Image (cartoon, rainbow, N blue to C red; front, side, top):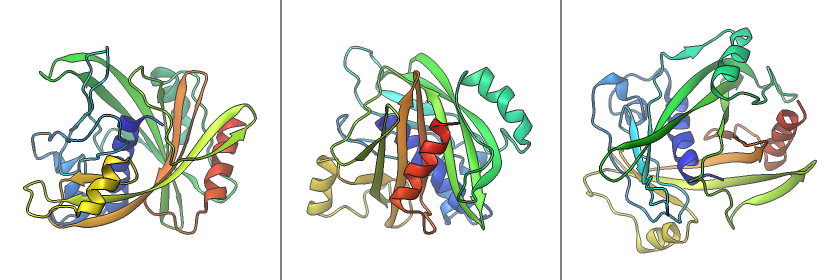
Length: 259
């Protein structure tokens, strides 16, 4: 799936897992909202060919990765917590406006039910910070007994890198669906804590993600299932699986595809 897209998904998921926390040293202070405190965005340093390098601790996050031929080297996410809707009936209006034709459901057969949705505008920039284009994605949050998953949908971008040798792949109808559980290590941005040699090597191979923006070393696992259908890139993701298995993720993807 799109490596830049997964970066933003991880940022979003970090925030959702931390909703309700207020202390700045908590997780909520290390996600892409940063309580609107005007923190300048940080760039992530990582090889373009690798999958992830999410950054937290910024209100709007620039993610890097050279894109051959396009001039785009970063996607800059502008999501804000207060730009959301709670009424499911509004979803059709927002989806049609921002990602026409995108599929979604009000609830899944496993009990996850729509909680809220929001749109996220993403600027595509070059190394000098010039905006070369932009697009909007929609994200729908679902909850079950306090656990959360997110469905994201956006137009496929030419910069996207949509396959990984570490994915589990199944076919639903004629759609290729990818699942991955990826370890994510978040470290302080000042370099006071470094990854081990083994971790750095795994990052270079694209097996794990190393991000920067926390006050201490943190480890999470990012779970996602993703696919492309009719020019739209979809993902269902979480950092809090709460018993969801790989089969569960594929089943949820199937319900969206068949909706």
